[in-house]
Amino acid sequence: MTLKPLFDRVVLKAVEAEETTKSGIVLPGAAQEKPQIALVVAVGPGGTVDGNNVPMTVKEGDKVIIANFTGSRVKFDGAEYTIVRQSDILAIVE
Image (cartoon, rainbow, N blue to C red; front, top):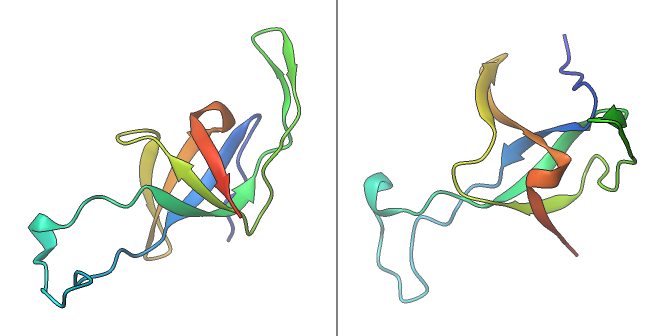
């Protein structure tokens, strides 16, 4: 099975944060910040949302920055994903 988002939605998988600081200090899980960089796993077809045509500007494989506490978290086939609207994506990392 695969995830296929609808309309202007995008499926993201969080990029793992480093567990140590640059100075070598190991951070416990509770002290780590939630990752804001994610990998685009699947992209919806776009289409009409609220009467406006929405072309998709992100594609599978892009690394993106998302806002904190955005989207819906889902578990699928043992992995965790976040599903967001394209408008919740702040930037593409190049």
